[in-house]
Image 1 (tube, rainbow, N blue to C red):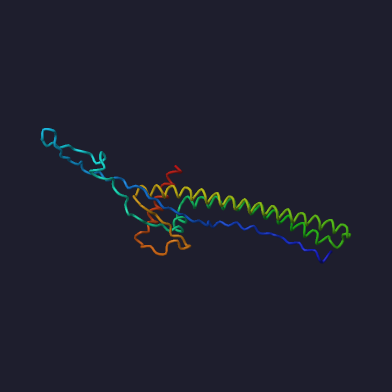
Image 2: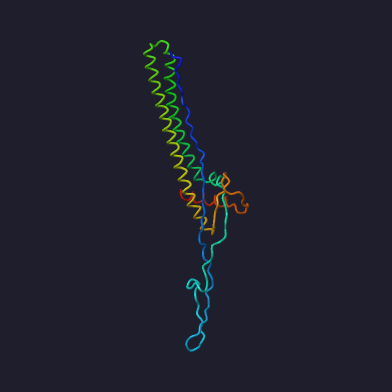
Length: 223
């Protein structure tokens, strides 16, 4: 057996389940207009008589203006939001199930290669130089096939993870927009671990309320 023979075995396919994300939501909705009492306008006709007329606020900008945007600003904590969101939890479970299937494929490839190497190690001494050379060449080709298959599995895992993340965040963004508009927020910020918000008063943290809303909406969508 040639001492110079090196058979590297790339045996582990790591499936990363942790989702790296960055949510950004900045909505500036027009607040729902407040119903005002009709305005009474006095005017004088050609004979000099004074008359009064009732005018709805919507009928003229001279009498009143639409309610201004509110100044409501709040933030949510991204980590708590995604960890507690049922939609993300279900997506992660689905991804983990796929990951177990990919790992099983990987283990099958590695075990097949390891068996071939062990067989060669047992029989190598009794082989001729030509047989050893041919076997080593075959093992080298098999090793390359295993590496290529692992790379494909890793790419598939990355694509599936990216797709999962995109779907979940897309849904979250839409629901955050609906929540912001419905509750009259000018701005909802995301407090991420990277430190996008240096400081925020605790009374501006609406993570629990938003999470409750998101999970209720998600549960309703599954019925």
